[in-house]
View 1 (cartoon, rainbow, N blue to C red):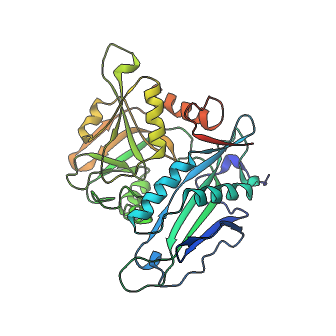
View 2: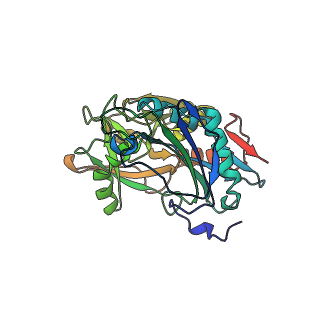
View 3: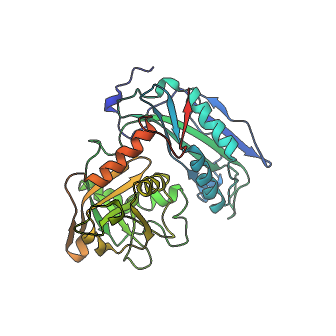
Length: 346
């Protein structure tokens, strides 16, 4: 195992021994191979540079309490990358190629899988780019698929803690029926004008829908979760509602999908619909969720234009805390994987 201070890792790139690559040319994907070459040999007119033909993914492998490694729901990442590829008119990476690349990246970088109990994981960043040289507007016909592994720590330092979000009505992350449902770099680049000023103030950015600026869309680069208690007197699970936005402009989060499944398992009502910003007043808990942050509880949401602050809680509350630990217990092998989400590497 590498000499790394695992406890001090943040969500930053750490150089692995190998990355994995596979090129697509004349309709055929080559067999994935491992290489120490971390640089792209790319024509300056490649369609990824000229016209933004690029998509990526993010997933993790966990060293469990039993010492075994668990890769979490990689097939769902393969399916989502295929949808992103189709959305940008790229050749989808076959699930078989995607899986081989992930497993090879793990095999060649076993020393970078953090020990159990450190809070760190091995993160995989699958990347798909168009490599055809082209100046005329149009899609490429050649592509390269790359898997970049890196050990990471928590996305938000301080582990499971609350974050303040600020509403921005002057920057739209993605338009309805645009590329918002695809995991492409342009969605993130377009958000920087809002997220970077928020980060400079020690906060993060809450995006509203681009059409009306009325409904909650995304929490920076993550999905939104809200918890409502439907009864002031009953504490039955059926009286707890797990709310998340339904939108044609947000990324379908695999973490959110997993949490919704766990919420249903616990008897909660799970609802996907348009959520007005004002509904934050009715929520007992709220959070951002995604592969990187898992769950990041929200303590308050500031709406500067309306001179309004929605107060939630300055510490993680029980329902989201329980969901967070339920998911982590599955990923680390501390609880039964009833849904078959983890591929266990002996």
